[in-house]
Amino acid sequence: MTRLFPAPLLSAALFVLWLLLNLSVSPGNLVLAAALAVLAPLLMAPLRPQHAYVRKPMAIARLIGRVGIDVIVSNLQVARIVLRAGRRPPHSRFVHIPLELRDAHGLAALSTITTVVPGTVWSELALDRSVLLLHVFDLDDEQSFIEHFKATYERPLMEIFE
Image (cartoon, rainbow, N blue to C red; front, side, top):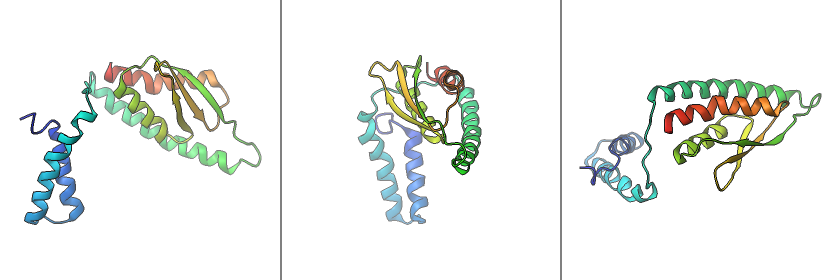
């Protein structure tokens, strides 16, 4: 069964999504949805050789909540900075953040989080995954930002994936 459906939740989601996007449950759409649900995960399975193992599922809920709050707060902060840019220009900087997180899935989640939160951009990851170069739109205290970043995002991802 796992050979036919290497990712059963993905297959189910693709099936439902196809039908929702087409707004039809005609026989043709059912066949196309089933074909997509079976073939897409089979064809994409080699692109994801290792599986993610979640250690603490409740940490995911806390992290999602924290990221949601940070997105709202950061949007307001960036808007305030842009509106008062004539009086006080932002202090943009590149920050080197030492990383303890090594799991590929955790690093992918971290890159997504930094991209979603306004005011931060993932710029580069060292080849040995030990240092992240992050661009911050407005930064006054680099050390407190690094501590906040590691405590808010990196440590929860380490709980989840390592």
